[in-house]
Image (cartoon, rainbow, N blue to C red; front, top):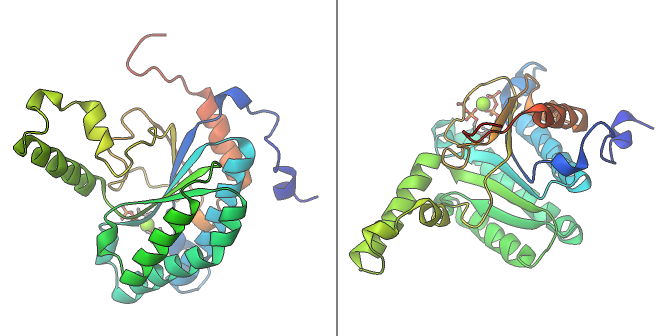
Length: 249
Ligand code: IPE
Ligand code: IPE
Ligand code: MG
């Protein structure tokens, strides 16, 4: 039995009661993974899809309720056109290919970000996938595509400002709960744990509001190499943390 297979069940050194409900992941290092092997960057993105598929399954196996993955940032449009085009086509292809299996596994899919700027064909694939899986009761899988937290907060402010202008709410009605409802993540609990691969210690415009008290774990491992052993390590580290939320224990 391979090590990977032996990790289908929750590892015994993890406390089942303290598994994070919501895990978010910045899947970074695809380009460096490919480069170090002499491949074009896009091969790294392709390999990255397999790592994400396995993490989704692992989260489901180990009792994580929500997985949110950063697939494309509002700043990633600034990359060379061929890489951007490749990624858009990849998202579409993967979504079409994996939908049946995700249905069978009861996964509920949601895309977060400014989806209107995505290619039309990808937008329809996204609408189809979200509609088809909307009643599923299994793990919730959020994919951040054309997502930028600053843009998300501005978008929420605009929605709220127009409610005030139309006198549907008063200024005093604006509070944390209301603002959260207008974020792309409205209705989704904040992440408990954010994992970033490839050693970078920054948020890169991901879930700025939502991560106010989320735990951050950074690994040097590049995203295509992130596997169940790596996730196990991240969870062990998370379970050692003392989450105080500003209070004293
Ligand atoms: C993350 O890997 C994937 C996306 C941003 C789409 P990168 O493409 O950023 O890989 P590196 O950081 O250049 O190695
Ligand atoms: C963050 O990675 C975006 C995604 C993983 C989709 P980047 O590679 O774009 O971030 P920076 O440029 O290193 O901050
Ligand atoms: Mg990167």
